[in-house]
Image 1 (cartoon, rainbow, N blue to C red):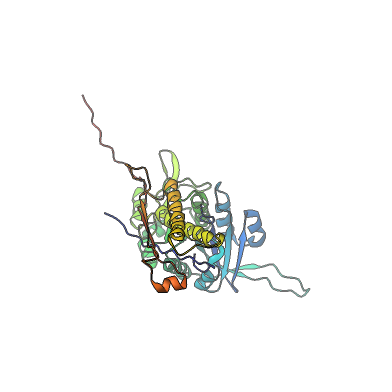
Image 2: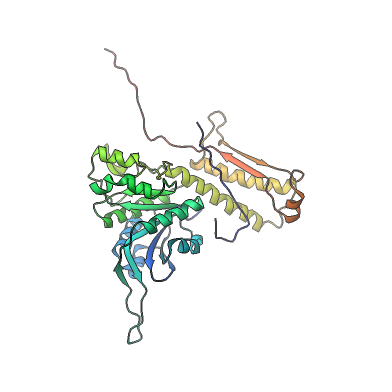
Length: 363
């Protein structure tokens, strides 16, 4: 991915027709007096450092309380969101959220030469930093910004304005849960922890159970208003607690975009491995065939995982891989050892979210 040392560039052009690691890791962006990043493998480890920050603890608790959470949670301290996101883009997070209303102050040295404990100071943090993170991720065209809102009447009433602030973002998720901000932050951690690290393509983000999150006390009309603005929440259906939808603010399904991210990351990883582990990938039919085979293998795995649809007649994935020969490559590319002749396309598998049944009663 971007901001990493790589010889591979993968561009996805998404047309809507009529497991790499780290795909479920979460980053918490916290306002501070200097830029920093820390990674944590457990809630207990994070609590030792951020024990005084209730909202950070709530997200971490929600995240690590889920059975299939990612292998790491990052806390990124920032003075400017976009600058910090750029600096730590290579850390391996797929989801990110801004912790609202707090500022972490670094430890200072006291009179006895010992560090004073870090403190947390309330600030008038508004939506600006969250929108800045959303815009940054939209610009990258990969990964997700996650926003947590308490399930209050006020938040439901102004959900259209909240969505407007993000500019119909294709990479921003708004999850409404809990009765206050602390519970909403737990909900964010729980959502990503419960679903983000599942085999990408194997699950949709609707119908998912999140440990520790309670169904909201909202009317059907209020929930429909959230859905109309592509936000979603946590409800009970058929006596089962579950997420009510699984879309980003633009109306894209999270699992579809997550699948695209998986394909991109996997291609970068496997093609880089091919170049690095081979004595030489020659600029001829044999070398090009190796590249073709690597891409085909990744797309076949994507098909098996449920990212790419299956052709019912052939039982093969609905994808194509085409390569240009050496003769079809430019002299400049050959001289620079830059192969640009591979193209691929695929059809997303999608998922069924609603079912309409037509029945007949015979008397």
